[in-house]
Length: 213
Image (cartoon, rainbow, N blue to C red):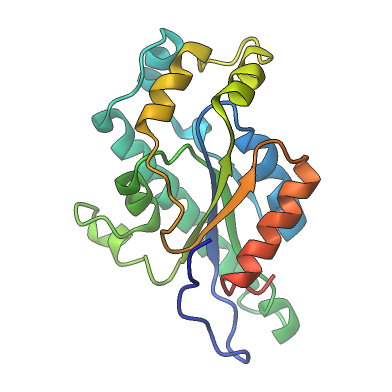
């Protein structure tokens, strides 16, 4: 687990956060993402739902996406999270101080395989539009990395008939994955843990990074 971003004073309001559950196909990102969101009382955003149809068609045919396919999708995930947080803040602006202290933000799922993909999701990549890049400090981003062996992941994928991601793409994703451990704001959980154990481990890791849950 990496070091925490600069912590907020205890009497300061908790800034909203974007928590992204990441990993290669077959890790159970959606399952953990929705469970973690429920545990934190935050909305859940399924990153795959934001793929354009062209991306889905390409993956359904067994072809991996390239960077040009992914960049606008990744930017849309962050933009959607920013829009959700802006709505939360408008709705809660007139509420009492105790309510205002509660954690705000979004939990999303996204493979986020490369370091530069994660920089887009953090809002720190230099090619982003000014509206996204200027938001990086106002929406701190954390990653929950689901890690596991190829054998376990392949077994899990083969048990998921009908999902558009083909199990033959696992090796491609593993080859593409740039290990996020050591980057700022990353928590690791094991793929072989139960969902309840993963949620508990993610909460512990996020708290250690300075997120007041």
